[in-house]
Image 1 (tube, helix red, strand yellow):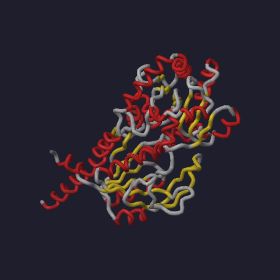
Image 2 (cartoon, one colour):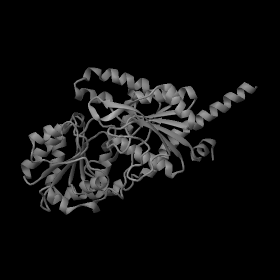
Image 3 (cartoon, one colour):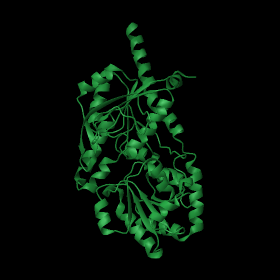
Image 4 (cartoon, helix red, strand yellow):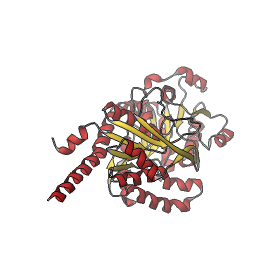
Amino acid sequence: MTETVQANRRQQHITIVSETFPPEINGVANTLRHLCQGLMQRGHRVTVIRPRQQHERKGNFAVAGEALFTREHVVTGLPLPGYADLRFGLARTRHLKKLLATDRPDALYVATQGPLGVAATSAAHQMGIPVSSGFHTNFHSYSRYYGVGMLERLLCLYGRWFHNRTAITLVPTRKMQQATRAMGIPATGLWSRGVDCHRFTPHKRDSALRESWGLQPNDRAILYVGRLAPEKNLRMAVACFERIRGLHPQARFILVGDGPLRRQLAERHPDYVFCGTQCGDDLARHFASGDLFLFPSKTDTFGNVVLEAMASGLGVVAFNDAAAAEHIRHEENGMKVPLDQDEAYVDSALRLADQPTLLNRIRAQARLDALEQSWNSQIDQFELLVFNQTAKAGYHAVNKQSISLL
């Protein structure tokens, strides 16, 4: 067994820095929940540095009774423009150096590229702590949806500067790996996502919930789960559903989530079913009670909800990007179309709505394929990529000391 592998196997202390963390509900927070749980189950110690969340009085809380960290540091948080329910963190580098010095970690993982991540990376550099980062959010792509498209190039340059300050940047898909390298970020590692198939399962289909949506047993529930925001391409989801309803008047559009577009959508479409934010087993029931799942986003770096929909046995319709590019095989376990073919997206959804045999076959295969996407294997990959930087740092430190003694 090599020294690198042995280093990966020993118990280590990692500090995770993020602008968002459970119990906040979004893809990054969900991913970090599973990451922290997986690392602690392997005996690693996890420290979290994050901003104070909205309406939070104090830190050091567990999430739904789950221990996600062994220690936590909470810094000042301010609302994120365009995402008022999320915060970005403010902390001085010297303050973070003191925090890190109180219980020095073997490695630092920076999940978000905000001010907190910048300060933490600087502090770790000054202390000689290996730093890895994650490319979780396409902020430069989001800018065009919030009326500041002229900042896209600037945000792209900032992202390149930020991630090139870390030893390796973890990306969730091969396509995103190509994209980040094209941005000028060469040191990348592939770290995908898993899904909890015990929680997300077709067995949680709830006939009473479907009835509350106004559905009869054979009616179609067209489901969307995610943030109700411009960058999620909800206009496409609405257009797609309206085409389906033109042929299947009894179909209902079920939207799970919240965001700045909710009021506008509710005013324009009072017959849509808005379920608000759901989590845990309630979210699993909503997934399992649907039939078709629309994922119209063209900006997500991954989209955990795609795997959750597959695990729940839904017919997923998505563009050939992010999670769909990695996990959906067209007409086998879902439907995916090129990013520039909106009409093909609608046609794919109509086919599933019109052809129950095709839909049932795809739903069954989606569940089978999701069973192979465990979080356990993804935690293994994270250990290999991130703790390998620790091993390299240790090797270089020992080598430098040896040279100085000659």
